Length: 438
Ligand code: SF4
Ligand code: SF4
Image 1 (tube, rainbow, N blue to C red):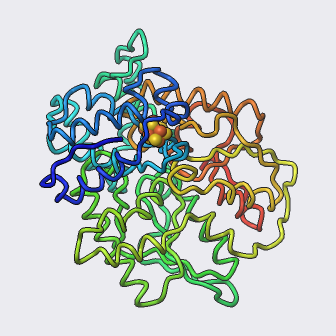
Image 2 (tube, rainbow, N blue to C red):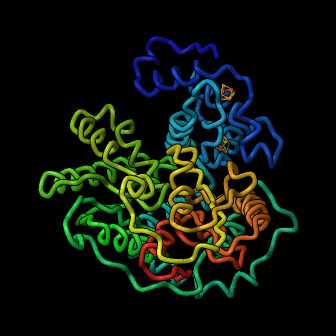
């Protein structure tokens, strides 16, 4: 794609990056076929190619974001299916991330929407506040019946609709909190490795059992696990809201404490059980490339970050002990398959450990969770969730496995089939407890 940035514009490293990305796009449109919003809405402006044009116009002409641009960028899930499909290697992620920051900085949203986004950005990365909000949401859930329901689903939802979606996501009960930062879980037997395990923010409130399963499995196989003290939310949630000041501050804080831990006790890897977080931590090196103080450390941390299945694939697991006939529908989280290009490892691990693994039809399509998307765009998110659950039902699974808490909550909201994390199944197969929902 031809671009016309001025030399002065290109002096800005972000614009120079955008220029490189835009020039790689040959506007072939292959990406439209796998874009969930284009598949549902059929509007070119809700396709990757359409959004790329909108972003190009905004950046090239140095125009403030218009309502039209904001509408179509907001509808993007950042699922990155377009990056998997694109034959030209267009880095849509870095382009849309930049567009979101510009929107956040230069576009004035209606007051109610600003308030909602501010609350999400403040509450979700803070586990204590998030826990409290889940308790309040659970208490408030009966009130949703009193809120008016829209007659038809809309791709531009109202605040009420979003509040209803938020309340609907609250779980029926919350599990007890898991271990806190600063905890060290020694290897059982001879120590063969030492890793940090990201504690996560929403996940540690909704499903601490996931990291517990990771700790059980790792220590059982000779790996010492550290929950690093003073670690923060990885920044993914605010990054996807375009609030890069917050996201980068969290990235720097995490880089500092992880680097100190690596220097103190040694770290073979920083393991992540929520693939949405893993994708962003693996991108810290890029996000902080212009930061003289942090660029080198950020690149090292990104290189150390691994999805739990990536790391466990390199361990000789104990032979499976049971459950060879259980059928697992493997839901491939977008952040894992498109963001991190990890597609086979989780399925191979499950198969090797005695499970019958089934691919889900249309597995490239997002389930609609996408960070805060299922709150901010509930109608599109629900359509994607229903489509995903119907596709999962086609393989008649006993359980559904996924590698990202957001997907797990989204899918569990619409099926009676137990939804578990891949690591819980692997822990179970190698001697841990049978996973359930809580
Ligand atoms: S597939 Fe890639 S090159 Fe083709 S239009 Fe989409 S982003 Fe551009
Ligand atoms: S990230 Fe997902 S929703 Fe956004 S343009 Fe790409 S495929 Fe479409």
